[in-house]
Amino acid sequence: MLHTLRAMVPSALAAALRPDPRSAARPRKLPLRPTFIRIPPGASPGLPVVIDRLDGMTRVLHDGGPHSHGFFSFLFAVRGEGSMDIGRRRVRVEPGTMVITVPGETHDTRRLRGVDRWAVSFTPDALGTSAAAWLFPSSDQAEWLALLRRPSGSARTLVVPPGERLVWKRHLADIAGEIRLRHRGYREAIRAHLKLILIGAARLAAEPGEPEARAPLLDEVFRVIEAGFARQLSLSEVARTVGRSPAHLTTVVRTQTGLTVQQWVIERRMAEARQRLVATDENVTVVAERSGYQDPSLFSRHFRRAHGMTPGEWRHGEAAILRPVER
Image (cartoon, rainbow, N blue to C red):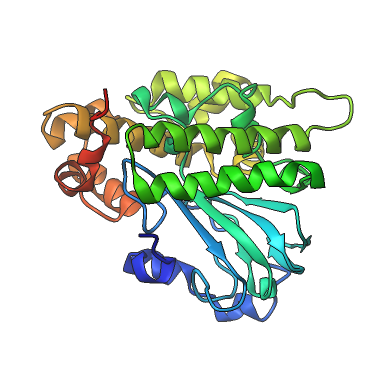
């Protein structure tokens, strides 16, 4: 059964989702709130995807007002018209519009009343979990390109051509059906449908004459993080390795991805920890050390902050679903 965010959200995240009265008074001048990637409320760690069909009238995912998430999300409008505030921009939403929001990006959906739409929330784990390699994919992977920010914002507010909308609706309906029925191979089916949607978004977002957008600096940064996350790795070291100043690198990475370099280092460590907690019987201290933490208590604090549960709860609770069961 699908659950609403209000029903499933942990108390800490619920507080983050409540509108800030000071922000609500000036919805067009909202600061971005950097945040770690969290599991969408209502999802399991082994299947970090939640999909809802909202009629724009009777059902809402959570209280309106400016808020941000710790995961990726997008909406696809089916009927009706409205608008949505994303950061300091107000975007028009009408049938065929797809709007992508990234972790930490402040947005306000109160003006979507009456807009019949699909709403999908997911973490990068949804695109594959093997050895946490999903975290830093090459920038020429189309499904990743759809999630990258561009200064113009053009890559994340798209209009699907009328002739393609039925196919998108079918993909979304199939994702909902796979989550509900959970037949053999459902995780792979959900991943395939989600990738096809994001690849379609990346194609729509491509600039004229540019078959595939690239972000070579991001590739460099992610390679450095991948090589060094398991040891002490500072922003200064990453910046020095890629030949940029720490301030410039911070601006570029946050603009393109919504997270800072240090947050990506932590998220990579969290990804390693998630895999080790499920795939091995290493104790938490060993998991912490092999994930880049010399201090197990700091590791536990970061893990709980990122996931709303302790490493032990992750290992012994719902995370067991990550173990392969289909053959």
